[in-house]
Picture (cartoon, one colour):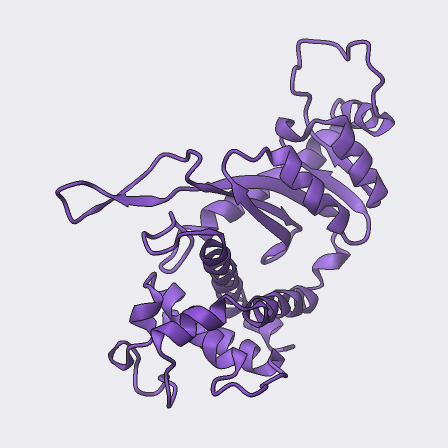
Length: 287
């Protein structure tokens, strides 16, 4: 499976990489080597070794570990991975969906146990990161953000909601039951639908957003209850993201500091998208 997914990622990267510049390796050459490492849950040192490549897939010239690490910190690598995300979103017509979902996922780190060579998963404390995803009914997220674990989901949602395309409904859990988020969703032509955080209490004496009041009324109707069932999809998507070889699990020991975590996470999301297109060849044929 790793071979087929890498071929899909290689094709998109080489097609969308337009600028070469004065570098010995193009941005696509750098990114596809990084994809190979991420697909196998290995470090960049592993990916630049020719012995770890099959003969028919190995590039003619592999960059050094220092070159790969330095180039992956540049904006061109991140922009190319973002362009691949945008191209695949356009293929499946995600922007035509009326239902969007938002949720967060903690990313635990690995630590080495003293006196032992094995790695153990740490608790999701301040040394971990949180992935916040805004997605529709499709193969991948419409937008995503990464922040330390002690960052509130509401704070991250304030960054993502303004990027909502089109119009429709945004489904969230009770954590997003906040007047400011309802107003932000309305400004993005969406109605946020979330259960009340405190079901046994009233609305208090403070002014309430009219869009929060509308959400409360909708949740009492059959239409609102059936609509909110679609939010289960994002939980299944998080499960699918971690349920295959090369998927997103806890952060490896060599993925530290924000730039490396961001690149690792971005690559894992693209691997998951490539897996979706591999299972839907009729859509991939449109590329």
